[in-house]
Length: 483
Image (cartoon, rainbow, N blue to C red; front, side, top):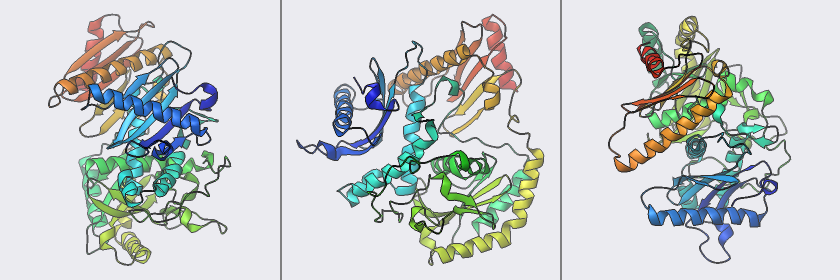
């Protein structure tokens, strides 16, 4: 089942629906909170939502404690994620004509998790918005603008291009850290201390990034991950420099007149567009902010975004400052700020007066020790290291991964899919303990693809031009671990 290619438009659909809504006959449309593509006929939207709801209900009969994750059909794959109780996100992707699967369910589900986490950081939980405005007009407006802007990153031409086997050595939902010397770490610690005191009567939180790598954070892990993800998507120098080549659905001629402008639970308005690339730029004072033309409405993008950090349980204003390759995200507790934008301006002034020299010093020392994007490359290896508990990963640079043959990447993608299934089975049988796992597979192009899980940490590797024996693969992993 699933939509045909003609109905799918770009070959994929993304929907968000609420199982608690639209339970009466004739009210089925009420449960749909978001559907992409927006111009899909209503009857087809209802067909997809109805199928997904039926699958969720059916699988709950046999597995009430475990959520449905994926359903395969002849032409489509349906990837499920229960973002909040009874609020589901489903991604429907069209299968290619080749026999080999080109994507991994875990990677696609990671997109849904990331989209929801970012949405909740800016707008609060979906259920909270629905409870405050049962008509769902507000939450639909938020989801429409936010998810449409989020999906714009996946477009290649006019078609959505989601992660494939070529992304097997990447891990969404993790932070990539910059390793620094003890001397630099002390300088960074001194900087974060000064940043924390900018408000005076309360402590500010901060994230410091160099290039696209995290240097330091004062936030809890989950909040760090969400803000880091947003920074890499939109705020770092690399992200800002790509603005000219980005696009939004406004360029496609889609109307947003129906989006409401009333206030949401965390003080933002439905017209705000935190993921809209074209509105963010670095000013002469070094702060990154919304850039408005004389003819635009200032409510289109927040002057200073207010974010909700679930783990820290606090709303905070976000200020972004850049000096060369250094990006500082300063978070000001909303409960401690009395005068709004005037108070934020005062905090910015304090930051520039007290931290400018420290910022320059940290950037200089990080730049001197920076080895470029190949800094963490291990010669002869193409690898991905993941620590799920700490939400941290490290991987071969993209330029090195592109040297791998297609057969190697397809085999690695297939192996990662098997590892995902094995982890899921073990989690159901023994949720309190991690299972160690190791597999080395010789591919048809005579490469080795390797997966190893030890005490919860995961290593994935592809080795080409290597020896033929299993001993060679095992020795290569041991040498890599030692390095």
